[in-house]
Image (tube, rainbow, N blue to C red; front, side, top):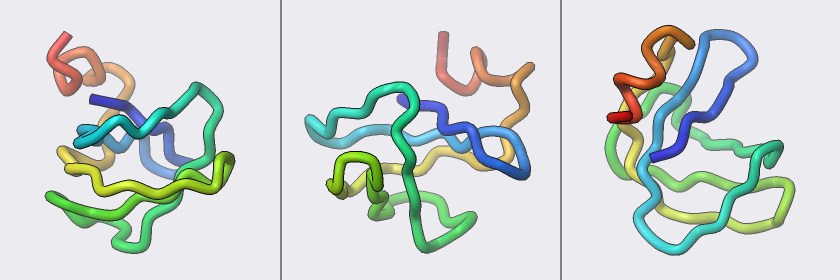
Length: 70
């Protein structure tokens, strides 16, 4: 699971379904703003894309550990 900081409303939580490699600072985009479930995300920094499973949007910093199952 990965937490993605968004510019406007906290964090988006995704589950990586394959060996897609991400690093802190990578810029990600997606078309379906608040879509849940299977979605295609694009890593603009590396020029790659992958199918991910979107768990949640608008997650506060205080709720991150719980959302990431830590």
